Image (tube, rainbow, N blue to C red; front, side):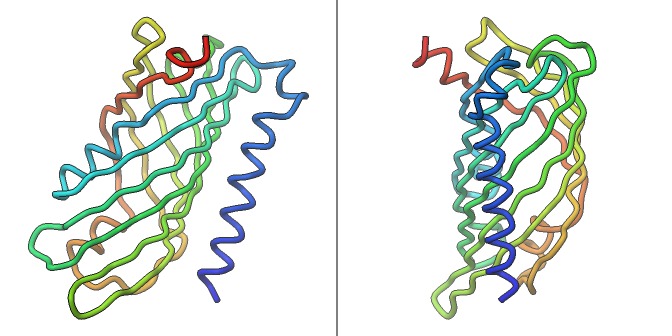
Length: 193
C-alpha cells in the first residue's frame, strides 16, 4: 500500500513538472531548454559492476529559476553480494541561478524523486520504492552548448524505504552526502536546431 501511495505522489510531481515546463505561460519566460543524457548514472552503474542511463529535461522558467524533471534506469551487481539490483527512477529538481546567467553558472536547489527498485538472485525477488529529497548546490559549465560539466554537492534524505537485504545495498540507498562531477550531453542542441 505504501508503495502505491509513493508511486502516485511521485508520478503527480513528475507529470506536473513536465506540464509546467511545457505550459504556454512558462513559454513566455523561457530562455533555454536543455534535453540531455546524464552520464552520472552510467558512472554509478560502472562503479557497481553494472550500467545506467539518465535523461534530464531542464527548462528555464524565469531568468533565475529552472525546473529539471529526470528519468533514470540502472542495473547494478553490488560487490560482495549475489544480488542484482535494478532501479527505475523519476525525479524533479527546482534550481535557482543567483547570477541570472540562464542555465550556466552556480546554482542552489532542491529535488524530490522515487527509485523503484527490484532486488533479485536465484532464491528471491523483492520490489520496493525509495523516496528521497535532496538539497543541491553546483556549478554548471557549458562547452560550446553541446556538453555540460556539472560539479555538485547534495545530501540525500530518505523519506521512506523498506528493509534492504544487504549492507552494501542498504549503504547505496541511505542518507548520505553525494558529490561528483556530472557530464551531460545536450541532445536539444544536437537534434533540435
